[in-house]
View 1 (cartoon, helix red, strand yellow):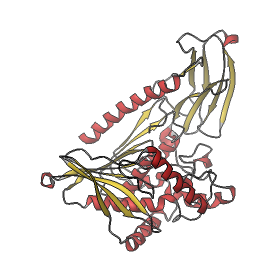
View 2 (spheres, rainbow, N blue to C red; view 1 turned 135 degrees about the vertical axis):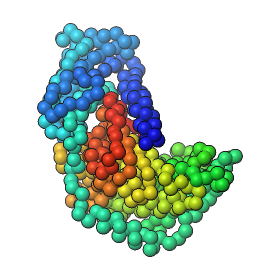
View 3 (tube, rainbow, N blue to C red; view 1 turned 30 degrees about the horizontal axis):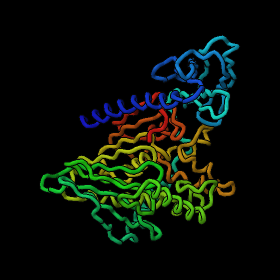
View 4 (cartoon, helix red, strand yellow; view 1 turned 90 degrees about the horizontal axis):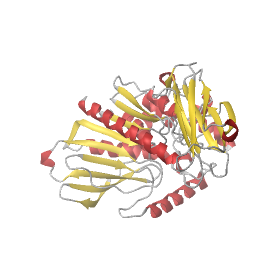
Length: 431
């Protein structure tokens, strides 16, 4: 419990810091663009259904003076397809640089105010508030055969993926050694991870710290902290050698994307969208999930690992993999998932924004029906139903990548009695 309380304190501080940073990033625009500030009438931004929110919007010049001219368009929406109201405020005509917008939600979810200066290339400033978020449910139910599907997938992979995990030493210091792991996946592919262990195993047992990468190109790891074992997984089927540049890895990812898009067309050639309309086994993440689970099982079996101190922690795409792994690996003793992606993939059916990567919406029209049938088997909210260990979440109230409604759909499904969620008021996407 002490460990989880410490984790909660750290995450709370991080969320508060990110709130400040995200606000600063939005407001520190160069030139003569207006600086737009938004605040709700409740600092915690929590409301019951039907209660009215009053947003206060303030416009200032780049040097901090009250703005006396400019037109601001505002829109109230539900983080999705429901637009409740909109208008344009002419600051010169109104005679004030401050105005208010009022709105409410009558169903569980989030209300978001978007404000944008009506000029070319002007950024949009946004602020989200929650309405009974503890009552949010996923846009589609979990398939009845969800558990059987993954049980069978694991059994088949374990039968066929008999090639050993290859280890290549890539870094060593006085305390730890790091290895690149090459884990056989499905369809003859390989998934890569980085495993770090203390040099003196006699000082064990050691805690195991497990995590996955956020979306984007693969990257290489670094030796873990002394006194612990670490496993960090990439999601791609290409090697990202130690010392490779971001540019090189971005080029590797583009080649992978293009190769997959030739076989599995979608609106965008992006790995996270590809294969889902063909079959569950063809989806990009299918083999990654199975290989990542195998790498974890291998790490957890090491004799110097403390079986009672195994934690997963990551963000966004990595947060989704935390739910995947924790559901499939009961050895994990606690989970920290910051703004987990791949949650509520059918959120659009409830009239709101689905979780990243908007998987079904990104398919070609003639493939959406098939994608909708397959996507729930990769929805992190459905894996959350199988999570029993202590859990801590972070939701960004102004996050349009992994929207808070999608994050809450997964959080509310978690069966663990020991769970808590940290609200990043004003926070955009953590990366």
